Length: 185
Image (tube, rainbow, N blue to C red):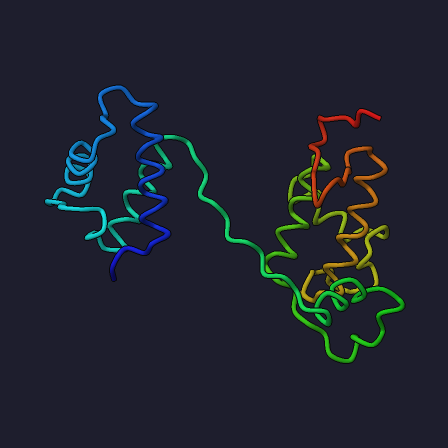
């Protein structure tokens, strides 16, 4: 498959950053082509002629060398019904969703991991809390986060603990503080 327009732009941008930071790497077209040929161990005539896999290899190499994180894809915006469900599922006023439970997504579980990590907990401490009488899943015989309702209950409980600890802050979207940072107000 041919290189995508997005990959081409990313590769050119990263290469210009690499040439600005590394000694001995020129910024000109000939130097860029020679660099790509050397990295791929095959002749390269133009970045536009690269395959998608070759471009991905070069992009990953530059990002690793520069210590740059890969850009994350924008999170898909929820439609009205999905947003309502995400906000109500697991609450007493969200009983309308109990008849058709929805599985928790990887994003839900990642958010929960972020929250308990910010509390300074490791996975074993989090699991112990889930089994404790203070857990929002205490009504389950084997407390596991399997549905959106379970994920929301756990998320809201952890958010409350973060607020109580003084390490939760929200401004212009989502801004998170680590447990070591303190609020300035």
